[in-house]
Amino acid sequence: MCVRNGSTVLKPMQNPPNGSGHLRIVFANSLRGVAALSVVVSHYFGVFWGDRVFVGKIGGFPPADEPTPSVVLLLDSLPSVNAGVLGVALFFLISGFVIPFSLQKMDVAGFIVNRLLRIVPTYAAGFAVTLTAIWWSSRYYGFEFPYQKWQVILHFVPGLRDSIGFPNIDGIIWTLEIEVKFYIIAATMASLLRNGDLRVFLFPLALFAAVVIDGELRPGSTDSNHLLWQFRYQSPFLIFMFIGVAFNYSYRKKFLLPSFVCLAAALFCGFYISAGYLTRGCFTFLTGSYLTALLIFVLASRVSDRWIDNAVLRLLAAISYPLYVCHAVAGYVVLAALLRSGIPAYLALLLTCAAAVAVSLLIHHLIEVPTQHVDIRRLRRFFPAVRDATRARR
Image (tube, rainbow, N blue to C red; front, side):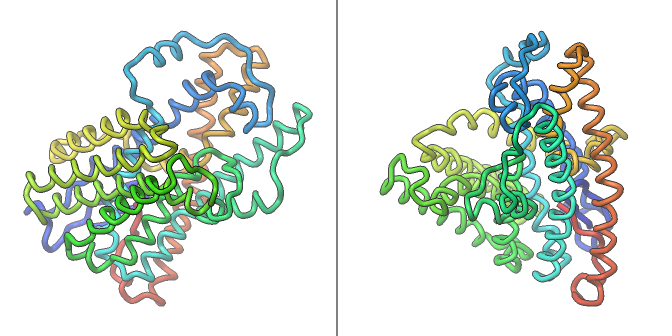
């Protein structure tokens, strides 16, 4: 079997966990496309209109003053599930679910290099699109480019910016920084994950205990120590990602359904409680969206053998990662420019979405796919464990 960040490719396995000839996880691939689309809808139809000052600040343009379209007002009136938060939660679950499969086909060194090649080049391309949009917008509207050179350089590699405390320029890198930490954790527990060892769940338990102790000893603390703050901020999401690992174990028949339900419920409670220590409950609003994502993943996995695959879902899955990394700030800039030129809001939204998809397709074909080919051809001679593996992606 082969798993990648943007899609899931099914290959015959000698011992498939479901007893059939294939490991059917097309549903996870499709959900990745759905997750990316949810984030885009949230940003273009929600954040852009609901937080205009913030959007203008990060995009380098004056806040938009156009009336809010009725479709945006309709989305705001729906039950308290945020589409963007829902999409991120699905991304985290999918990563937790598929990474153990990747480790079954690679040694630790091959896994780490593969993850770097999977994440960094495509993100760098998307971030370059973001920087270009901010640069153009700042010059066009007469603002000074808001970031220093070193802030920009360190932003190109997820995992460096947050360690130093530089600003989040594109609004989405924080999720990739959590992903990188999960990869490191997975690499250190590679043999346990390969074998379906339940001891891996001691890590989220220890992480939960550390967050609770830190939260009780330093109640309400936010930025007194940047690394401690990052630990408290990112830990709940790492705990949540282990629900995806529990899905993986259940899918591989490592434990029965009742055990999975109890473990998933315990992990979700750990996520909820630990998130509450972020300035004493500022993340409580996450609960509904993350719980909805969990229910969606459960339902999709239960009907995985009957999952309907189609061209639209395959396209969204293929470009999900490029779309995620390039759409946000650049989309805000394009949308604001179209509105200021007099284009109606609905048409401006449609054109912005089309532009984001077009740029994502370019990044997918020019950067994402080639780096995966380089990964296989060049790693084969250095990492024997990768020799017979297919392209491993999230």
